[in-house]
Amino acid sequence: MTSPIGGISLPTLPGIGALGGPSGVGSVVPAPAPGSADGFAAALTGALDQLGSLQSSKDQLAVQAATGDLRDVHDYMIAAQEASVATEMVVTIKNKAVEAFTEIMRMPV
Image (cartoon, rainbow, N blue to C red; front, top):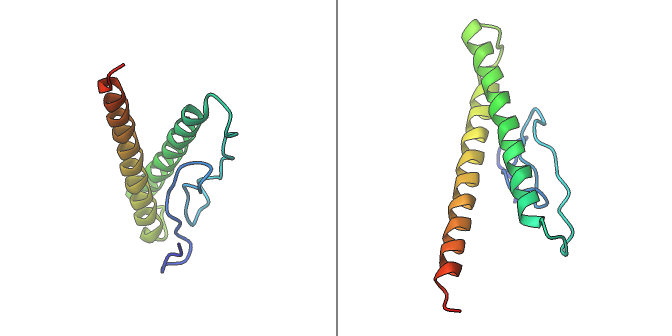
């Protein structure tokens, strides 16, 4: 999927794509092997690490904006939106995982 605004990528889980944008904050994390036992845990850990990276980048740009050192407000606005979308994505995935676990626990043995 291409973005109408160049330089902005959609945040996704590791192995599917990268969480990152114009500054290249995020990096692509290779997908775990299909037979590995810790595939979901590794993917979730990678997504949380990238979310933390996006949040810290946004925080640094916010400090620069507050002190007047930031040249382009656009950089901060893009970083803030990326962090917001990534946070929503991770929370949604967490909610779906909990929902799936709950549904599995309701199944009769």
